[in-house]
Image (cartoon, rainbow, N blue to C red):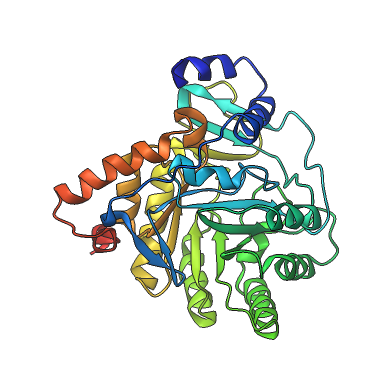
Length: 348
């Protein structure tokens, strides 16, 4: 049975139920352990680690570390767990996820539902993965000290992850995006990096930002991340804008929009950051990646690594394999001998 038929059946169910069914299927029905032999042209070294290809699973799909180890068999080179908070939380009231099928998009207002750092850590300790594992961390909704929450979660995972992503970009936790302001961002990064130093750790620290920042904030954020020399930046999370051209009747639901409508907004923001930071700090590009063409555009815009989630929802579990196949052809067609050569070429 083709994924298109399965997808039509899945559309009958509530989006969160469909997601739970997908997690269940991967956890109990998918047994393959075969990992792709990727074309060497896709290999890239980032954060001091070799990625066999640039395609990763974005945070949000595997919130509780249930199936991350399966994704290397589906062609992904890395997976990101979370967002994880110190204490378990149920998130915002349901319904809170909306599929916009005509737009190949999703709106969510989940609010970081997860089982909490202790339980998630115990799961990771009991699983091996052939891929690279990142942990996306954030504060609890009712926290009285959000920086303390970031520090507590960082300390919980620094020794069992390949990198840690600091999420300041979700639109579904009130005031979280205030961390984009220079003073608050400096305080957060200073505390996290001081903790890393005290732990004698070298785990890479990545910052995930919002696509809805103001123009003047771009240079301000670049100055801060260059000052603190963090290891990477993820551009971007979901947007609360971009609703005007959507066709689905659910387009005005409150929450963050992901998928194809985010593609150009994300690409343009990546270009603006790349023009300032260049290759000093690698960019993880997120937003609308659903094909070899869209992946290639992000790389040419300045992204070295890529992540997807909504593309998985609409294109199925073999999306990474299909993207890699087309991406190899596109790179070779344009005369590139490595993916690294193509990074940021549209910014020159």
